[in-house]
Length: 120
Image (cartoon, rainbow, N blue to C red):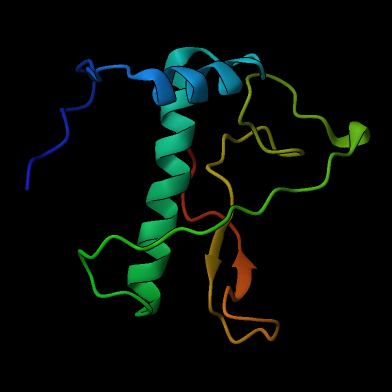
């Protein structure tokens, strides 16, 4: 297992065609490259964390993320500031984490609020 770079250090990733296309999609929302990487990694990390903390997946085993939940667009609750900010509190968020919290309605479980705010 390798370790992530220390805070403040740059991250280097070789860009292939798929990453290029994925970043182009995220940049359409007005994000910078750094915003896009932080946002995407935050969402996936919250999914992993939720799967491990709930006991649905053994710790250290990569969960099979099958879908993402997206809030319905509401023009009256547009975030102010940078992309990725919450709709009303101005705190950056990584999205919602699917967890099995005892809700009914299929294997994907219910939705819980984000576990952490993204750092600017």
